[in-house]
Amino acid sequence: MQEIFKNVEFKIKWKEDSIMRKKYIKVENIYLYILSNAEFINFMERFMALLPIEKDEESKDAAPKLSITAEQLAEGKAYLATMKDLNKKSRMKAETKPKKEIDRLRDRMFTFIMDRIKLFLDSPDSELRTAAEKLHRMASPYKGVTRLPYNQETEVLSGFLLDMNKTENMEAVRALGIEEDLNRLQSYNDQFIALVKEADMTESVMSFDEKMREQRNLMGDWYQEMADSAFATNFLSESEESLYFMSGLNALIKSVKKSYNQRTAKSGKDENPGEQPAEDDKGDGGLEFVPVEK
Image (cartoon, rainbow, N blue to C red):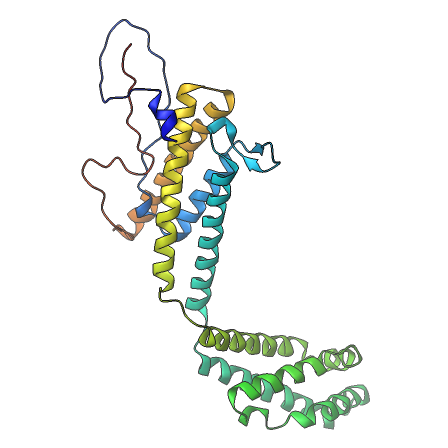
């Protein structure tokens, strides 16, 4: 990266004269710290989609027209994958109900299913009564499951659901109209299992927010390096691919900034101020290079 810049002298200077200068495209300013996690991830996905990817000598994805190696590209993809995984887990954690509430829901659903089966035991419809009798025989050993300790109840309910969903029982299940109820019970049990696994996992010292912040910093630095490389490569050895990329990147940055401004205008404040940049900091991708006159 540094080698590219060593071949060109730059300084901040504006001077009107008659000497023809080479025109170039600079990268638009964007302060990545202001974006929410979802916006940051979306920006990076769209940034990567703009890269003119081709296979290198080892048949690995790279962007040689921008002087971006396969190793650099793989590094960015790894950061992005980690961020997406953290963001997904963070959303799931926020949306998941507390363990006790989930347990109450699965208890109530199990009881409802059992009561519905019992109800049809006295049905005047012989087909419904036969279906109820079949399922009642199968379900009877599971009575009292809601009084078991959490983990034991989870295992027993898993066995109950496995039996109810066996091929030979599905006709009876559909006849009594409890297929959707079983699906809900399965969902509640799965949520409970996920909560237990999360609690049992050895938690990292860092919280989700800390991990995400770390990954954002790493990917922000990676983005800056790739943007610098694209700018320098386009300036030194302009190509159709580099021009297309630079134009597309600036259009992307303008679009993201516009969306951010619209979002914050609605809320009336900056929702994610983050760490403020230094006064002389041009921001991520804010390159202000002017070629020295020769």
